[in-house]
Length: 273
Image (cartoon, rainbow, N blue to C red; front, side, top):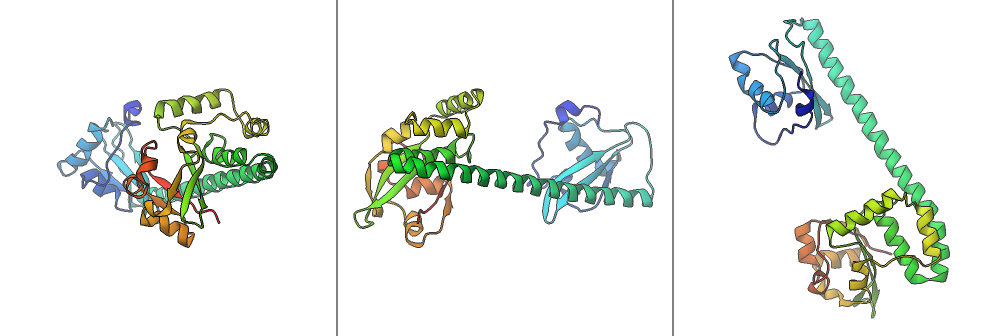
């Protein structure tokens, strides 16, 4: 296409039953011409910034098993080049090869990310044991910081609850994070600008220079009866299987004593055994 800059920002809602969506959900290369029969697809592309060629455009859907990864659009600008059956077969082959390459790239990126996280946790675990022998509170803050920091697992917030009173009560042992989005982004940006690494953090932890976040100050040492938590969280405690809660479920499952100072969002609940 000619106008690549605006089209590069286009978004197509594929869940809608549009002409473009129907075409690319076929697994074969599709030719869209300027003829009347293709007017809806042409209009949809032009509406999203694509400079439709007078010679038409080829749509090459890119699939990974049952998942549509994307689509390639190829045209000859204003030259009227007709493709024969052999060339169409080559386009279909090319589309499938791109799908394979993308699958491998996604898998490699995922494996590399997991490998990096495992390496980080291995490095941190040795230091955390040393910190635990000196200061239990600093140990728990280190665990939660590794879960939330830009050099760590990248979660937004982390709350830690431990059992007491023969497992009838959970008390808030530590927390990391903000309710205020602007404050969280400011802190994240500051750490990125000063290239705050896990080594720098562990040095601060050893020296007990870790600043307490607002959530830690609010939650620390709160005692909450287990029965005040929703049934899904209680099941996690009983069975030991982690779950993910939507924002709505988190609002429903957390007791008011927590929600009075903590704004629930989608989250994971992980048991410590």
